[in-house]
Length: 127
Image (cartoon, rainbow, N blue to C red; front, side, top):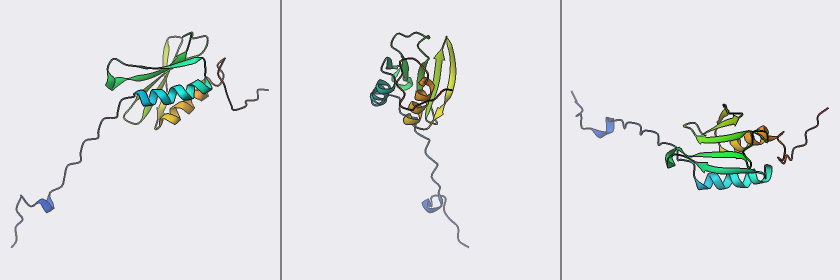
């Protein structure tokens, strides 16, 4: 009768490695957002804010910071991808979770479609 030793590496399973935490938002994402927002909303600004580097957020807001101009947006990295929140009239609302930054930018563009001073290449007919 054959016995396997407990030290036999052929039968040992390797424990799955813990998922690495997502990389914080940084200058690369800031550049991407500034270039796109500069085209679709030239009177808006994008800044990188955070209390520490691991929890940085991209903030998109009107240059004048006025709620009359439109809402502000906060983009944070989430375990799924990216979380988008809208801040308007001192109320924060979650817009959604997105897998990629281009998805986040598309959502912001939709949100800004009817704000004054925002370029919109898609023609909208209102009857």
